[in-house]
Image (cartoon, rainbow, N blue to C red; front, top):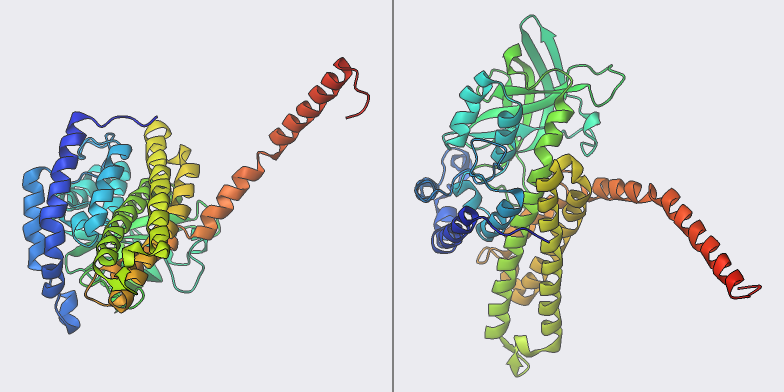
Length: 430
């Protein structure tokens, strides 16, 4: 059984629903119109975003993502916040940022809140919580299979009271934003450590540090997501003080695991919100357009597609809510199985729903006149981000394989019991 919403969560949900429907979705066209062209795309933020942020703050729709254990948060459970994410996903480029609940800032703020010391919190967490700056998380590298983070090659070397960083990162989301002032960099401080999970550390690197070089924006199926973007970055003899180390040397994996669990669920619920909106657009389209003498909605094939979308979305929603509830009960580490199940299933299901909507729209579905193509491009990334499908499926399969001895023991019990019943009933051979 899932828990009920608290009165506070119920109030926030209604406020957020009104804000998304009445402010964020109507602002989408203005937002895209205000994104500049050429190099200016990376120098200016659409003015309407700041207006939306101010309204969200005034409504108390701010920093909703930090769960009850964090004093800086809104006091929501992961289960309650999952529902909020589904609303934000309906305006996925607008609503998360407008409420200061957008990645990668959310994960970075959680890291600083959970693992940062007092000085690090004062310098970086406070302005992030207030929405004054933005941040990025630099882990993925182009020259190694980054799905296995032990492959990361970026070097972090101690020199006196400083660390020197050298490496190349790519698809660093948010790094192009002119408000991005902080990089959280994962690199190796002890590459020869016998434990491959204690070789890595995380450093806080101000974006204006000498040697931090933005090489180029990278596209996702043709979209560059300006002004935040996804950048390739070179770190060349970047020097930061030892005080910028998060938690301690060799504890990078501990930090990123604490960061990723809830974030994966947030992504999944936002994906569901985006898919729900896509289905709504599809329903209106097929009701308005006619082929072969009747509305497209009246064709049996279309009805089957619509029904399939609804069935799959409800299945996906329950997977995510179950994972969120499990996190509330036992923490992200204890809920890894439920998180992985949702992480694999939900993006795939949401992509299928959006793909059906695109097909119903025909050529218009892949145009800039509707949000479907951009939604598809963004959600396709989820099957790669935060651990690709193959990694999660491997973990799930390994967990299932561990059940074999118990299953064999149970089967032996069945056989012995069947033999005893046969003897009781005077049956010599079954």
